[in-house]
Length: 204
Image 1 (cartoon, one colour):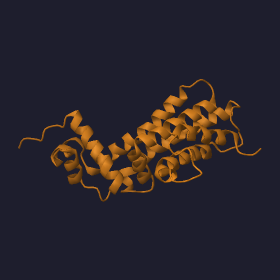
Image 2 (image 1 turned 60 degrees about the horizontal axis):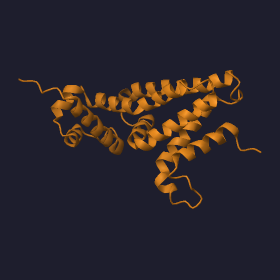
Image 3 (image 1 turned 90 degrees about the vertical axis):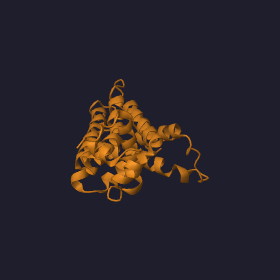
Image 4 (image 1 turned 90 degrees about the horizontal axis):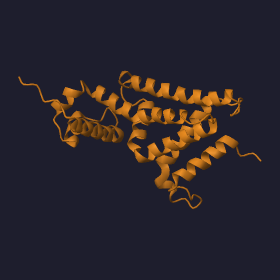
């Protein structure tokens, strides 16, 4: 029996894109390889020739979605020795990533809230945890250098930055209708203001 042809790089990218769309909208359990193959314009055999299982495809899609997290930390770490600038750079880049690729944020949120079998998503959770630790260390380095307050929990700061980004990116369509909000379509302004408040606080 002749084995199915190996997908070309363009076909693999179509599969990954189709899988991201379906996994993000339907979740892992409801998504089917047949639906992914149909959307990507390839056969199921071609998908399984490149990805040994549905779980392997899901893991790759999630790893791609998480890559921008690590990339943003890499970019921030290259900034001159200014902890505030590094943290603001990270926050701004991640917000842009969420807005430009909303599927990625939905996929990661699904994975982190136990979508799919634990064994299928644990490697991605580990990758996310490693990137989160790097962000905490970036903040902690600023504390050691005396550039950031040493009496705050750096992990809590990391959570607040990410939470502010995710909430804004996910609720922008709704925020546009709020009379008090004039930054729904200005993510750079939102990011700058959010980080200014986080870094300086709101007490007089």
